[in-house]
Amino acid sequence: MQETFKNIGIIYNSDISESKTLAIEIEKKLENSKIFSIENLEKNLDLAIIIGGDGTFLKAARFYSENSTPILGFNMGRLGYLAQARPNEIDNVIEKLKTKDYEIENRLMLKSQNNTALNDIVIKGINCSRTSTLDLYINNKKLCSYVADGLIIATPTGSTAYSLSAGGPIISPYVDCFLIIPICPHTLNTRPVVIPNNEKIAIKTYEPNQKLNVSFDGQVDLCIDNEIEIEKNQNYAKLLILNQQKDKFYDILKEKLHWSLPPRK
Image (tube, rainbow, N blue to C red; front, top):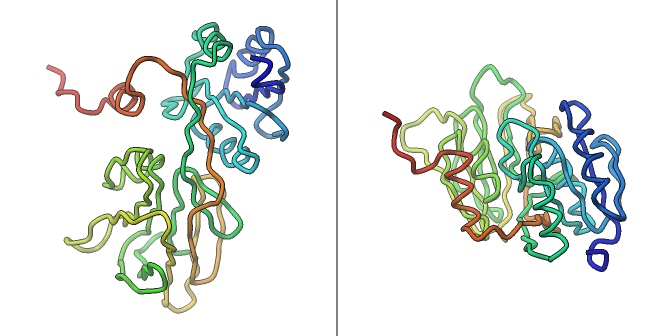
């Protein structure tokens, strides 16, 4: 393991109970590792082990994508959709790292305004108490106008997050595309749109004195003037996926989102 991961960071979320305790326990079993919090991320790692919920994972994913550092999550939150392991699986995880029984997946990311997102970029009008008119452009050509609470631009990874709640489709992370989903559109014929990931997206509003609220993974918020451009980020998030002799994406859908299960009697 030392030949592959010579510098391992174990990152905990101090707002989550027992997160640091788990980090200390992992550090005792891993050579060449050190602990720090999600608020004080350090670069120059060969592997980042994230302890927390999905929010902790998303923040670390954006940070470490700049250096193509693989990330592995232990879930200490509610859903932990992106995490690979539970707290009671430390020994199993370390064994798989030692035997190199894992894969590194590239996950598409979005970019805009010098910020990135692994899940999604959400655009809403500055006045959240009413709908906004948002014009969608693809490769500088106007596609349509939405009267809606906002728009979600999502990656396949983000298709199981806010996008799913807004009625968007589930997209496999192995499909190279982006999703455009209106939030509560004021029309009966508006549908989500799936586009290739090499196309450039622009969203504009022409309403007087209108600004746009833009949120990156629900964590970084900006207020900008009436136009935003979004495109594929040149770097990928590197997710370390443990080999567990099962179809990872679809099994996670069933395990964590209870997808395809019949109603309980």
